[in-house]
Length: 303
Image 1 (cartoon, rainbow, N blue to C red):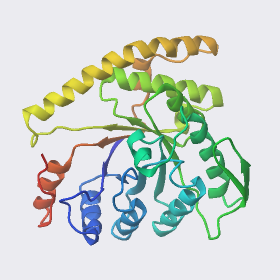
Image 2 (image 1 turned 90 degrees about the vertical axis):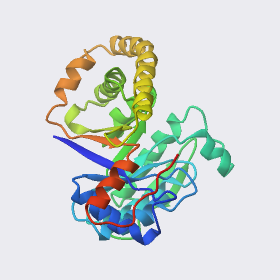
Image 3 (image 1 turned 30 degrees about the vertical axis):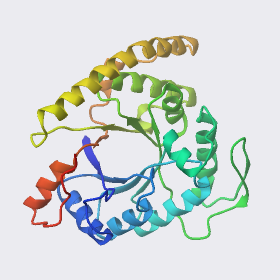
Image 4 (image 1 turned 180 degrees about the vertical axis):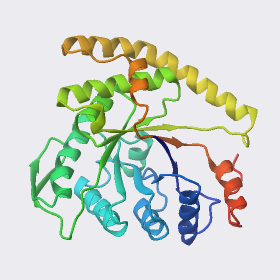
């Protein structure tokens, strides 16, 4: 089954924060199965927005998409996600990503390169923490000394947002889900799935053990020809970038012995699985639909 998710970030033009509940309720009513909030800039707290959304929705998953293991300690992030999970009766999802370099420049934080170690350590600390276990961990980037969650907990699924091969493989190894970042073409999706499959194979897991989310922009009837042209350029860019990377995947596959199905076969195999598509450029579409549902407060046009 294919489900759809979308982003609720309350950028300028969306209105005041108390409007978030109405937006979330309307999005759920439109059929969106997951509502995401980013944690990438100096905007409103995603945990506050998703907490408001939790009080105005019943079934939609509520995800942070995405936070990083640097600007907050992973266990501070874990406690926030567990709080949201408690409030929403188990609907929270925690998305982790490497973060954009410009974000860290603004924070004055130096991000290790590559970020693979920090991401892996974050998951290793979060897993027992979100199970209510004491965490005593010393890593190369972060650590924790005899810490545990101080309130009643529910397990929170951990998703890894990735575009590069190493993080895609890490997601296949350790995550409950993967958010495939901005690979809009069929070739780009195939490249991502091949790398995820390498990680699944390393950990002895199967495709049934991971949720696949694809984040991609959308241009609908309400968008201009220029917007659709931009999307076509992005798809062609994906094709060029991933064509060379697939050779690396084939080499890794050969080095690990057992065969990994080619990407075209894997796409067929995903039919019947829950594949979430997150439209990135959706403001005008949602504005149109919100007005159709009687909402007078709607986003302004942006250049």
